Image 1 (cartoon, each protein chain N blue to C red):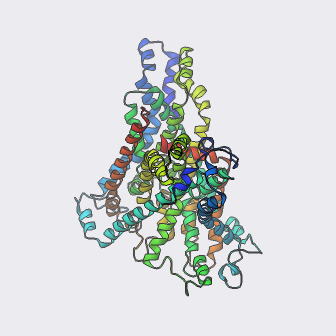
Image 2: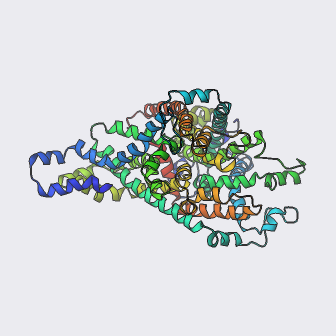
Length: 311
Length: 319
């Protein structure tokens, strides 16, 4: 801990950092000049590269395993385990054409999109009512919704399983579409409340004087201005759905109905010593859609993550 | 769902002209109620009701496919004498404390590093967050492969460096298995802590640092008396979330060890799944998950006080 202050001293990108769209080159003034280059090498670049390598290594390993031929996978003495010169797409081929994998991807996508849309609609209405209608008890309801965010799925799955069974939703995607919003609504409501607060109230007052109804104000004024917030909420909810495991594990039974995370854990884990290639290919293919989405919306993603915490 | 909220209003505004209706139409409470209906319906039917039902189930002997009867605190008495349950409580506390403490340490350190001025800053930040994006189960599978007993790349590297002579049985040995799942959890949680703390760091005004430096403050003093106090509120919130989600973790353990070896990595969540869904004892499983509620309440209280302190520090009412 004693070497922490070295870094806090030359924080200069604070102003530039608050507009995180630009990668700053090291041309700036500030207090950076107080540190010499060799010193920065040891206190900044070295620890940073170690952490980044540790954080990314599992993905490299996942990708490498998924394209390695089987014999190289298990014979670590003849071939160097860290690289392969003859990659194969056999594992992906097996995955896409000889298993239910396309169904699983489709199920995951379908459930995630439906649950996210439902949650966003419900959250937009709730957040607008709490922030702008300010009905009696709005703050209390806001607080309760925040508390709902803190109720984890792992204490709800047992009673929810009985509820799902009673309603005859067991083993149907509808069970997930209806239960995922309980995770998503609290989060996205808080996120959108933060965005709605930043929209000037005067705009709404003008519209009210011109005779607009609350519904028209929401659709025509507030929502267009809150589009960045909506995108943040949407992709974050989508990621949460994709990541959800325990409900999908409990509520789904037949192989073709499963979502990617559950299916990979349950269907691919047999005694086969050669399973690793297809297992890693499955994990990689299941992560790629999210990583691609993330690559396009990094800023929205970060603002979603920090926005909900800050509010 | 949204149609329910609007349909009655729209239909009636066109037809009626009655002043009573006009008043109602512009009544905040009435409008607010309809706007809240979809969200509250979800939260009441699929969150509040199951929460209560779970507590009720823990006082019954319900099994899968059989309606239960009220049996008082029998489930809890049974658990009180159950060594595996207490082992899972111990594991959960160990897992939560060790993982959260290290996540906080590394996360804060990484946030301070990323707040530095350097080339490719934005790209680095984006890369750091990737472990958080990828579904936990899928990265847990990668760790499962990395920690394989025969073909682990770690064992291979250490062997070739001459540090060990035979493979480490990562997930087969109780101590190693605990270390491995805690490591995987830290790996997965650090990006969240780091990026949120980084957002907090960026709100600290640089003039404070400049003033302190001019006054001759050492680097440690700058961190201790400027960065840390200004960061405390966001630390409180982030760590509450981190503790909460670590405490109730399920998927990482399930994908890597399923509670083994010899229950050494069973958390309360995985044990309740095993008892309730696999063994069919819904009542007993519900009792285990209800036993988590006091811990969650403690975490929520900490969060609440953290938020209060934040308002006070900002000196404004930002409800």
